[in-house]
Image (cartoon, rainbow, N blue to C red; front, side, top):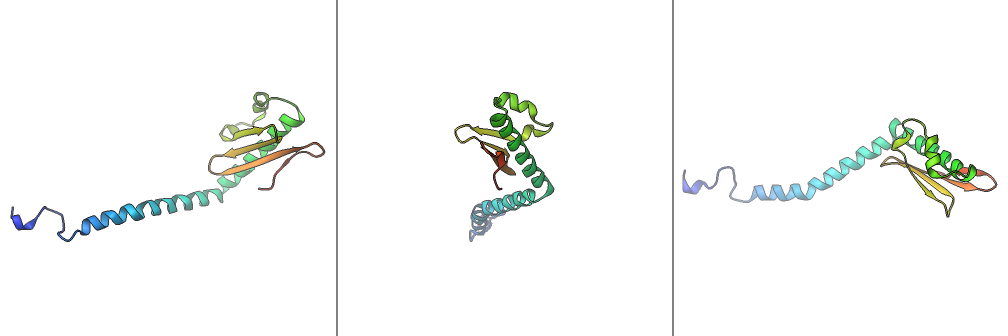
Length: 123
């Protein structure tokens, strides 16, 4: 091995370290851009629209169960359709509001009104 050739595969002017530092700078930006684009595409696809529909349905059903039927949350969960297990439900009794969400895709809320019953809030 010739002493003047340096280590194999490295460039004496530091171009490899510049490429590496550029990757660490732009790599996360590129990754986040791709993830955001994928999520936006998924939300506007038929899967995203079904998630929005399912979240709204569950929010309305649970709100009606809780505040019109005066049942507890454990009893209301028996009203879920098959496949609705992915929907997370939160009940805010002080506001008489139920929020249903499908992680990363959809979130809908339904609010109880004594005159009109449970109504979905606008998306």
